[in-house]
Image (tube, rainbow, N blue to C red; front, top):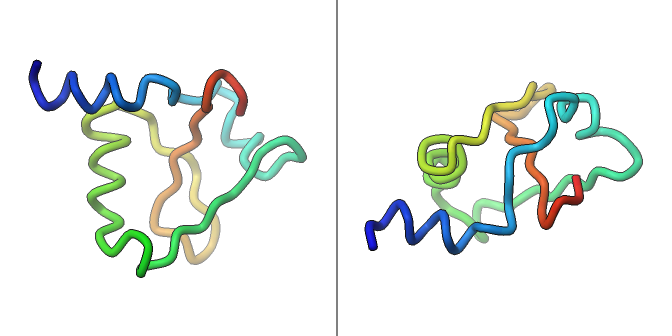
Length: 77
């Protein structure tokens, strides 16, 4: 199994959000989960994983955000 297929298999419960997701990011049902630098010291690696490997589209970042990727987990966004 290739590394890309292995990563996608491990992340099978995650999928790109619906097209209306940029508006849902700040809605009542959506959750934001900031990640501190101590928890994930290489944030661009996460961006590469989600956008480059899993091909999740970028969302619309707000002020003081480098990037944002809306997604669903087990179908809930």
